[in-house]
Image (cartoon, rainbow, N blue to C red; front, side, top):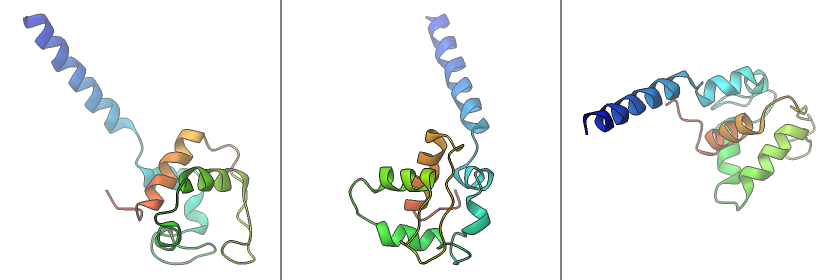
Length: 108
């Protein structure tokens, strides 16, 4: 019984450590180049994350659509300036970033 409790405790500690090592969505957005053209609340070259969240709020399957748009690039949704493709960004990272943007890019 003591071994089981010890294993559960060690497993919990390992999960906490690995979660702490994962970069935040904001850090992923920075390392994937999103923050070069986007800001959480103000338009830069591209729309603010807040504007993106508001525009797509409640739309079905928007997560997948936006991940594809970020990966492949696009133009016309927000004006004449095209968004470059980000083919080197991983699917997992893009899903984390897009989900974070759709939540309004919260600080935590």
